[in-house]
Image (cartoon, rainbow, N blue to C red; front, top):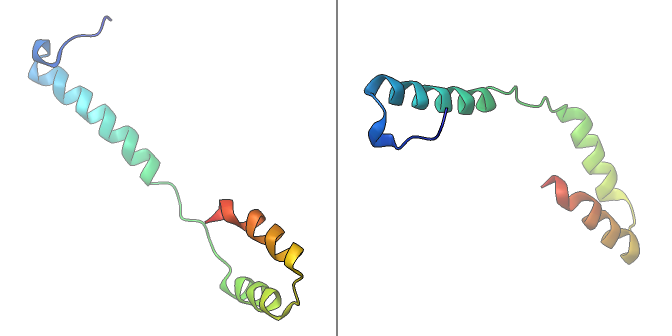
Length: 69
C-alpha cells in the first residue's frame, strides 16, 4: 500500500496506525527488569575497592566499565 497523507486517512485507519505504534512501544517497555544479585554486587564492589590498582589497571578498568554505564 503506498504512503498516504494523514489527511487522507479515515478516523478508523488513523486509530489503527496509532494503536500499532503504541503497541510496538509498549512491547519494548514490558521487557523484564534485569535481576541484580545485591550480595554478589556488594562483594564485587568491596573486592574492587580493597584491591591495590596500578595506574595502568585503573585506566583499563575505566575503559572496560564505561560502556556499562
